[in-house]
Image (cartoon, rainbow, N blue to C red; front, side, top):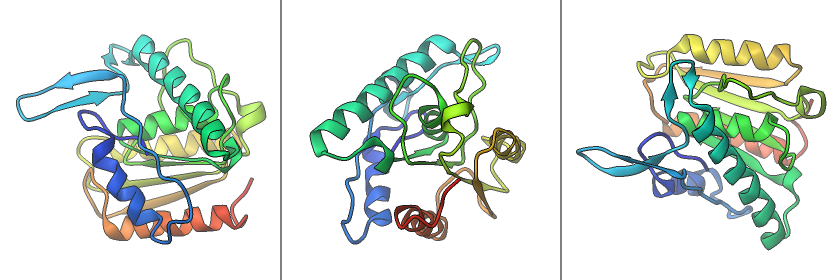
Length: 199
């Protein structure tokens, strides 16, 4: 579970419990390595903004951290990487997509991007030859004022053009997660686990 800008893993771990009410899998939250401080709370971010959109240095720091985290947790819990599903919200959704499709790390089994976008980062290439068979779930709110709907649509179009099988779930909501939306994600994860979702 990967949180959004200014949040921490504590904000998304309860959502993991909703997705796994039977307790059939491990739910792990990761904290982004770059701190953010506002007048309201102290949290973290996965990358800073840049003129081109995403700052490559902070993005790559976070990507390497997540790749190592999956490797370490896979060894610690005895769960092969292909059984791992990365779920992220907003910035965390962008990082979940990067974790799934960037080279250099373990190949995971699926990815869910909630109210996020595909990260366009200068100098970063993605491994479509070996990773386009990782299925994706993209959920977005039609009233999202923070990450425009057009970004979600272009994300889905780009993934599909790369050969990724994408479920695109659009909901009448803002930049948020809803119980109904999480139930749809829960069903997708169950189908993925049962082998009903694939390339």
